[in-house]
Image (cartoon, rainbow, N blue to C red; front, side, top):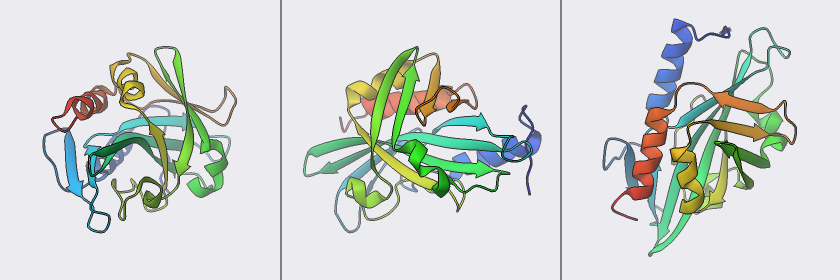
Length: 199
């Protein structure tokens, strides 16, 4: 069992980097974004190569346990009709509780960008909810839960441009996820996603 300290250990940094490196799809059009054709639905799927990473300390559940959430955008283009989503990869390190057990917390989320809240309701827990036939992002770990939330490009931009980001779940203040790192690369990927040639 892997235990994590409040300050990231060398082992945790390696884990986070390996998981982040494997979280996106294989095709890419630029350094920070990618695009692929869904083999069944024929939709063109655009995505970010670098997720934002958030965590919360849940050491009350198990010693030094942490919940982590990866956050990244998805665009689905079906014949010129674009729909935009935020994907969450929800997982636990060193805890006994599986992400599936906490799904109720993620039915509604609030992303707080420089103090401004953006509330989003769950679209679905599988890629079928966004009109895709295969995962856009690889799960950070096999036990992770996927969640998708529809939003607009105008709602996405403040997330990329914010100096301070927080993720709030579960309807009370103690369920706040903090940024794992400085988020610069993840925010740059979202900005590229918004401003890419497809859009």
